[in-house]
Image (cartoon, rainbow, N blue to C red; front, side, top):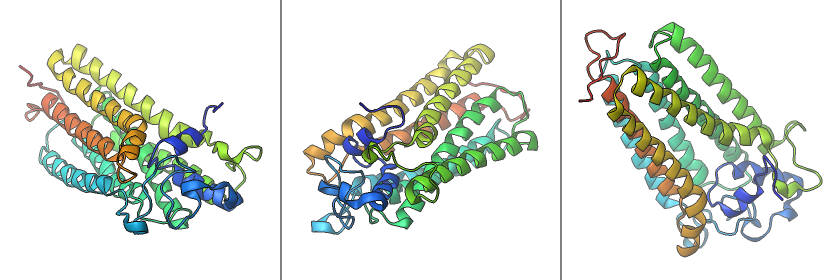
Length: 314
């Protein structure tokens, strides 16, 4: 039975699960004979480790890679650029710098997601491992910034000042560096600390990676929702505003369900041409858009005094 931190079920049954790029390299370096089926040839192998369904690398047998998610990532980048521009114009809005940081980090994850899940690069290569490790670091850092946005909204520190931006930068860099190190050690195996389970290498065990890329994002998102809901309901007394955050949370949950539950179904029915990753990307970007709308709503009239909220929900 799989135990905590085992990636084998994910890398086998969830198409385009990004962090499997790290374990493919790990197994290839340990014993390439363990890679069978679709993973047998690194030249054509899809994302995953011995996956039951996957999109083969671009160029193999006419494969165009994970084109649906490539397009979704490209369109999402355009959307986030627009959000960044309109946010930057709201110079007096509370938490503007922190929210810009959130948008910037989300934007950075998109080109890396395009490269690491697009079935564009050969499995097992150092370049793919490094790109995947950077992607993992950005994801962990993104949720640190998300949580910080909720903390800033409590106004226990002055937003946009060194008292907010310095600790935010330090914590964000710490999460990025820790996740980057863990990911590189799994993929490139430059120490024995995070090596494979010698008794059963195909368990694909990586507890620190699982915590930083799955448990931490879920916990940060939950705490963000609880804190911001408290502020909107009990500090601002604007119950209408909380529905935007409920919608954003719902979209985020649906994006994860699309990735983990719909991915295999879509992959099978589409003859391994697409999977659920593009739906997940669209829903994640929609969640970010709704977060912007919620943030804009609760700061709509904060122009006269940038240190105080004047909600405009009527």
